[in-house]
Image (cartoon, rainbow, N blue to C red):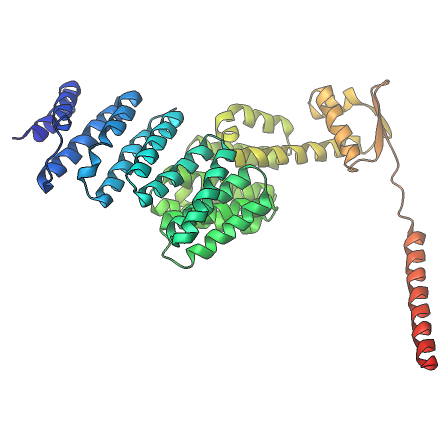
Amino acid sequence: MGRLEDAKAIQKSDPAKAKAQYKSILSVRPEITDAALKEYEQALMALGELYRDGGQTGELAELVKETLSVLNAFAKSKTSKLVRQMIDLFTTIPNTLDIQINVTKSCIEWAIKERRAFLRQSLEARLVALYLEKNAYRDAIALIDTLLKELKRVDDKMMLVEVQLLESRAYHALRNIAKSRASLSSARTSANAVYCPPLTQAGLDMQSGMLHAEEKDFSTAYSYFIEAMEGYHSQEETKKAVDALKYMFLCKIMENHTDEVNQILQSKHAIQYAGRDLEAMKAIATAHSNRSLAEFEQALSNYKAELTSDRFIRSHSTDLYDNMLEHNLSRVIEPFSRVEISHVAKLVGLDTQQVETKLSRMILDKKLSGVLDQGEGCLIVFEEQGTDKSYDAALKTIKKLGDVVEVLYINQASLLD
């Protein structure tokens, strides 16, 4: 039995000894033979997996950097695959974003030095995704601009789709919806020219759904989220499939179709992915159905991690809460012409300062006709004035007179000719 087989045999029972044997194999530069390179590759990945399972991020990062000098012995395609596989080992280790960025940058520098253009582009696209995860959107866009120019020159459609999709996500995060939509349209155009893998197609559908939701077209967004969920489910991307399901729930809630949420919960995918994420959306749907701000705030408190960690859910949950608050305030103050703000706050079950701030915003947005008397702590509600139709009628009369004058002028001009 060889050294590699010995190490694999004791990997679970004695990981420390297995690590030592893997290191021994990796300490010798492999011969340029298929068997030697295969043994080196297997030892490298096995040692990397041991570091990953043990949460030894520093050792794993050092292993990747040390291995780069040996990768010249491998074919270019094999080198690219190995580098990506090694970096992928970090993805299941929590709180390693900064280390992933540093390791990826080191690999990019090595790829530039070795003139591995394709590998460099692939790693730069990965670095963009890491920047987005870190919320470093400006860094991401700066790298995207450079990368897109190069990809358009070499006409690499598949990589182009990936980078344009990342660009759309970056601009979406920066709330530049117009540029985000333009980038997504470019990505879809590029995708039509090549075979688009299921994961990439699911990503395009997910982004399309999010942008339609930003434009309040929740019906179309729901359709895209279904496609995205099916795509992620087929590729066993559990987390992204759950996200798509959450967004489907959100669309139904925003459309006031909370009764359909229970139907979705009975679907096979919802049953398979049951957990706190879907429970959180069900709690929001119940609170919205009951028009209860207290239940809504309780749901936000009970499921804080599930509802606030996702930027898309957080944004629309805030809109939903504001709409519910406006509706409840309008209903409470409807019978009054003058009412104490503290009394309104008591009726809706919120803090007086919070209610005062919201009422002032509603007045400024002209959703409420009234004024706040802060000295007395009261809201004075004005009677709604009927629309004066005489102004519109006068404008129509003036327009008709203008038309008559213009016709007379044309007739007079024709007579003079």
